[in-house]
Amino acid sequence: MESIGSFINIKKQDLHFSGCSTCEGDCCNGAKGFAAAPLILEDFEAVYKNFPILFSIRDHKLSAYVLLNDGKSYCKYYINQQCSIYLQRPPACKLYPVSPYFEHILVDTACPSVNHNSGYSLCENGKLNSAFATKRLENFVEKLAETHAFFASINRLEHFEHVGNLSGIPLFRYTKPSDNPYIQMHLESLKHSWFSVSLHSLKPTLAVS
Ligand code: SF4
Ligand code: SF4
Image 1 (cartoon, rainbow, N blue to C red):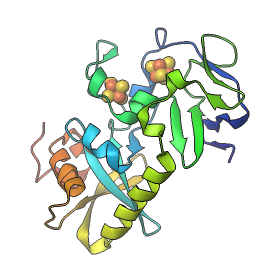
Image 2: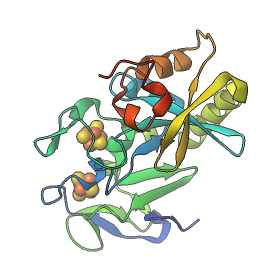
Image 3: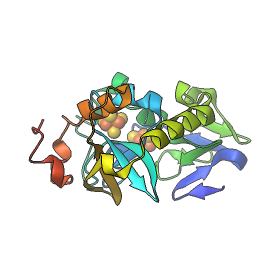
Image 4: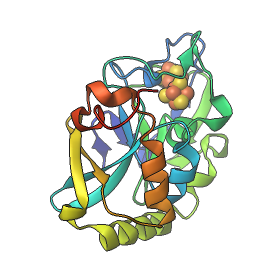
């Protein structure tokens, strides 16, 4: 696997990162970056108090996403050109422009600071500089397998309601009573309903925060 969109596999790469000081927060802007990031189970706890968590079902496969913005504008926590929840920002934000993909490590070349010779060494001879790693990368393949196993255990289409689409991602909420902690965090996260413009079914049932 060499690349996915603008994300390239670091396995044969020497890359540098020149810092965020001259960037206008492209990765926080849905018009330039991304609107949603896929979650593994350990991410639920880190994001549900600040962002909506929605499920997606494609090709009969269930996954979960944190919705970071409306796909057109900045994350609501991007204030005065900085992250206002820096210490509590989602794991995907903490890692960016690095992102795991199964056993691979990818770097987003859409980040304007990723380059081949200027600033901090991001990866060398295909090895990620530990300064750019977080705990999310540790045992990632095992954690991903655990996540997929949980999603498979709740994957019954009749238990989900389609609530809208975001950047082409079909999004669902869980509709059955459950005391599962991940389902509880998903349901609790739906109070962050500023996405009601995009998510039509959430509008009449959830208060706008
Ligand atoms: S990580 Fe990249 S895209 Fe995000 S603010 Fe820094 S330079 Fe910009
Ligand atoms: S939580 Fe912070 S770092 Fe993440 S998209 Fe929002 S403003 Fe950017």
